[in-house]
Length: 268
Image 1 (tube, rainbow, N blue to C red):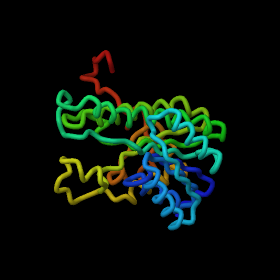
Image 2: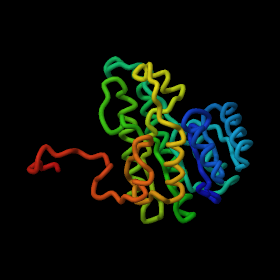
Image 3: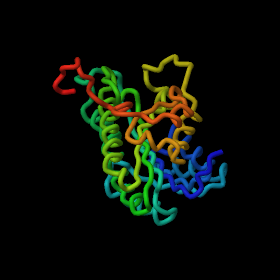
Image 4: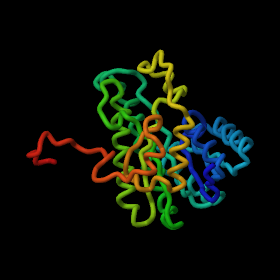
C-alpha cells in the first residue's frame, strides 16, 4: 500500500459521499487528514470514524467554502494543528435542484450551484496554495465531471461550474508549476451517493463507479505518480491507473479546448 506519511490533506465536503471515501482512503495510507464541511456535527462524526478506523491524525473544521473569512480561518487552523496542507481536494459542491432548461431554473439556486463549484474551489485554493509554495510544493485535486467537458440541457449550472473549475485547475498548474504546485481534474464517474440517487438522470441505475477507484487515483496523485498529468483531466472507472502512470500526455491532450472546424480555422 502506498505510504502517504508526511502528507497533510484537506478534503472539502468530507462529511459524506465521495469526500468521506477520499478522507478515509488517504488516512488509511498514513496521511493526516483535515475534513471541511458545513455541518459540524456530521463532519465531526465522520472524521472521528476515520481516525478510529485508520489510526491517522484527523481534524474536523466546519466552514462554508463560499465564505472567504470562514475558509481562511479553517485553513489557518489546519496549518496550526496539522501543518501546511500538501494535498488539497476540492470536492464540496452542489447540483441543480431540478432537471430543467436554464430559463426554467430558479435563479438563486442556479447561482448557488455555480458558487459552490467555482467560488468555493477558488477561495480554498487561494487560502491553501501560498502555504504549499512556502513548504516547497503540493498538489490540488479538483473533483471534476464529464458534464464539465460538454454542455447540458438539464444541469446547466453544474456544467458551467465544473467547466470553470477546470480553468481553475489549469490556472493553478500554469502559475504554480515553477513553485512545485501541481493541479489535476479528477472526475469520479457516478458513485452511489445520496446526491446521485436524487438525480432523475440516474433513476434505475444499477452500475456505479467503485469508490476505491476514485481513491486509487487520488492516492496516486498524492504520491506524485501522475505529476506529468498536471493541468489535465482524467476519470476514475474508465482510465487505467497503470496506463496513466506510463503515459506522458502531449500538447492539449485532456485539456478543455475548442475544436477547429478544419485546417484553415483561424481560431485554432
